Image (cartoon, rainbow, N blue to C red; front, side, top):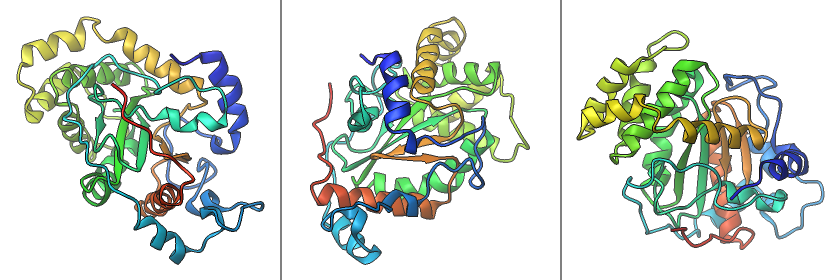
Length: 289
């Protein structure tokens, strides 16, 4: 279990360089950007044999040596899940943000992938929608489907009651093994909306139908009867406990990324993280039950 006070004091302070100033909905530019691909590798005290000291070509060569994961999850599991894989007590525990759990329906990709992207998002957030529609598909095709990256969703509903209700509905879809299809349907619908979409239960039911959720009545009931009230609340507390206040926010391996950054930023950081794994700077842990 994670300890909230410990997380606040040690993760937010000890790795404060990862947690930049953020607003509620985060754009891809301006001071809300806590990091960039260049910042991710800049280190005035870097050892000569570390990725932080390498040039782009050397990083690419090393990244190509990372071994893809082969243990793919099937999208089913415990829809009540939230939080990290273990207690976070220092900056050395940043990688524990990634669950790598066989029973996590919010994760997609190989459990043993070299790199995990833990995403903290809000279904009412227009910048989250931008990321899902413009950046996420390429990450899926190029990295997730090839076993190099796993993506794990974390609820951070910061945009009012509709966001909280949307998060509960997402968990109701996850309970029937259709979270990722549901998420895709919702964000596809929101991409043409100017601002927050303010989706309701009738919208959620429509997205669930598009996603192929098998038992729609069960979905409607669980999305509205309080089944996931506590899980969504605890997921939000966890996210704010590690210093996150805006969406979308990401941990790409051990690197924090704030906002709906362009694909190029994600790709450069993914390459750096793959190189770190290939270079032995990051060890890929075994999957959790």
